[in-house]
Image 1 (spheres, rainbow, N blue to C red):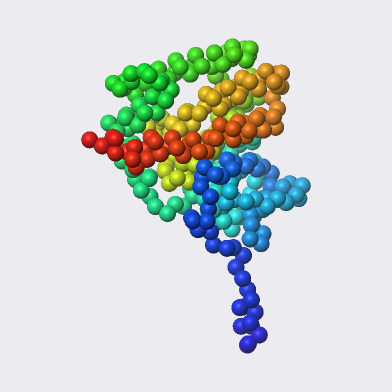
Image 2 (cartoon, helix red, strand yellow):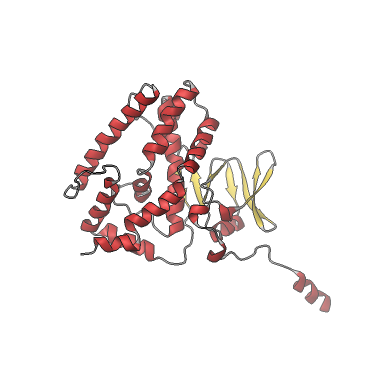
Length: 298
């Protein structure tokens, strides 16, 4: 009997408890890692990735904002627990992040951010004010104080169309318009392929930050009738300089041939160079943070 008690005393937990105080801020984390065809599990005190060839890589999930899980991936219950405790979001995406399917909700210590977001989005007047604040970033100096949401969306549609044309001319790339049919990726031209891939990857990054900050991706201010309206609202703030400019610049460099590795590398480098994680945190706080929300109260 004494021997059994000694054995029990020697048994130690595999995991050291992670607290909010010991985690780096979202803005200090690496944006994302894309994984496919392998298994995410826990070994000793860390999360590890085992690929299809048997290679093993330990992942410092506490310093990663999001793991994008592509086709052929599986994840254990313990790996999900550790990732959630480290505030590392899990997103399920298509091959090379071409499609964004879903994101795991990371537990947060409070719900006040989501409650404030719900209050702002459910009131037509405050929701319109937040939408105007979003559009004011795309139309600096324009008087949009009395514009309705349909009018703002019409202005945005024209701006985006012109931006596509101007950027295509800048890089000397032919452009026939945005065209993508779900499930028929190969039928798109090179620019549309890159746009589809980078847009989906951007959605994954934005969704992971929104979850990490305690907001809901389902309560939007501009978009509606879609699965992740707030994700699309925030992603639109960066698409031009991140996805559109990158797509046309890569068209020139890739000489008409889609190279998923080159696209992924260039996208990752630009996400880091533009400091997208910090900007998302700063912009969301400026738009619907506690101090900003006071402006919308009557």
